[in-house]
Image 1 (cartoon, helix red, strand yellow):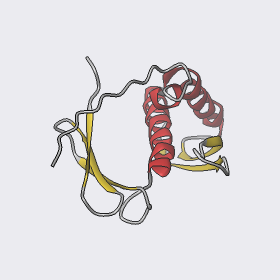
Image 2 (image 1 turned 180 degrees about the horizontal axis):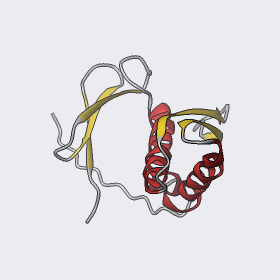
Image 3 (image 1 turned 45 degrees about the vertical axis):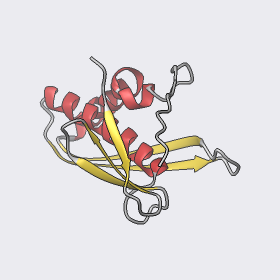
Length: 137
């Protein structure tokens, strides 16, 4: 079953509202003022995807995490399309016992190598198509 989302321009600047069909709405802003910009949204989506995997895996390992914060720092190309050239994620996990550190690292590795659909969706071999439905005023 396909995943579907709808993005609608609010009519104000570069502000948009988007949501999964029948899901909660989120505001995005190309200027990054009224909401996260598309690039920040991409970085947050990557962090949220990997964090969700990590929390799920760690819970299955029965390691009690008290908190997980992910800091994502990216370098972008100076010229358009200003794509992300590199990203560094710092996972700050708190909880469990000292011997759990290696298992939490394993959960991060599993997310990166196998489970994070956002990370793996950044591959160059994704087939992208578009259709325009235009209605004159």
